[in-house]
Length: 439
Picture 1 (tube, rainbow, N blue to C red):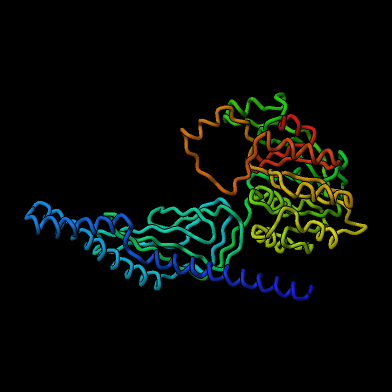
Picture 2 (cartoon, rainbow, N blue to C red; picture 1 turned 90 degrees about the horizontal axis):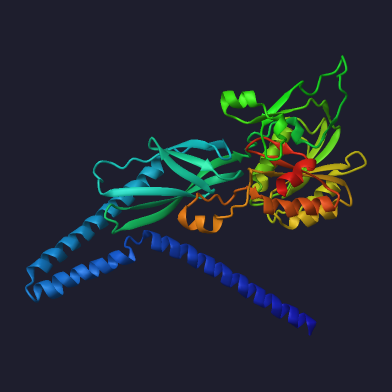
C-alpha cells in the first residue's frame, strides 16, 4: 500500500513538472508573438474607428469631412506600419553584421562603452529605436551615439541579451524582439575607498619600533575622511578651510599581519559593499601570509589571489546565499592552525545572522558589515516619496541607523566582534564607536 502511494505521489509530481514546463514554453512563445505583432491595442481601435468613419458614415451619408479624416487616419496607419516593418528588417540585417565586442571587463558601478552603435539610415525618417539589456542587469545610456553601460552588480556571464523596441514616430506600430550575442562579460566588485589596512581584523598590534631587518608597518600620521562618530577634536580644520573637505587624524599605530586568517563572503542582494571590502582586503594583502577565502556557492577554500577574485565575482549568482555554505567552508578550511574567521556581511537582517552565531561556537568569528553610507532616519520620508522621485537601485547597500542597530546588538550579544566599513568614505568604525553610530 505504501509503495502505491509513493508511486501515485511521483505521478502527480511529474504531472506538475510537465505542466510547469508547458506554461513556461507558452509564456516564451506568447512573448515572441506579441513582440512581433506590430499593432498596439489603441492603434487597432484607431484603425477600426478610421475605417468605420470612412466607410459607414463618410460614404453612406456623404459626409466628405469624415471621408477625408478617415482616409488620412488610414494612410497614417499604413505609413506607420510600413515604416516599422522596413525598420525591423533593416535592424535585423544590421545586428547580424555588427561586430560585437567579444570580451567586456569592467568594475561594478563604473561606466563602460561596449562599442555598439546604432544609426538608422536617412530613408527611415519616421522610425525610432530603443533597447535595453535583459541579461545581465545593466543601466544603458547613449553617449555620443555609443552604448554606455553601468553594471549594477558584479558577476560573470557568457552572453548578452538585448531587447530592441522599434516603432514609428506616431506611436501607432511597434515591433519588439530580443537578440542574444555570445560575449564574455566579467564585472569585478568595486572596493570604493576601502583601501586602508585597518580594514582587516587579521591585522594585529605590532611594536612601536620596527625591527632594523624588517619592514616598518604604520605611518607616523594617518589621515582619512570624516565619518559619523569620529571625535570633533580629531578634525583637521586647516585642511577643511583650504579644501572644504572634512578629514580626521588618526594616531599612529604599528600593525603587522596575522599569520593565518580565514575569510568568508556572505552573498545577498545588498552584498556589493561587502564584496568590495573583501576585494580590497585581498588586493592589499592585509590578511597576512597564509589565508583562505570562501564564499556562498564556493565553500572550497582558495588561497590564490586571482582565484579568490574569481569566486568573489561568481558569488553574486550563488543561491540561496545568506551564509548557507559557511558550515561547509569551516569544515574544509579550519584546523589547528586556522582558528580565526573574518566574515564580510551585508547591512541587512537575514538568515546569515543565526548561521554566523551558530558557527561562532566552533571557531573565533569577527564580522565586518560593509555598506555605502549610514543614513539617518527621515522624519518626513513618508510624504517626500510622493513629491520626489529617486532613482532606485535594487542592489543598494545603504542602511539607516534603525536597520543597523539590531544586527550589531545581536552579534555582539553572542560575543562576536563587529566592525562597520563604509565604502563611500573608506572609514572603518571600531566596535567601541558602533553604538554612537547606531544609536
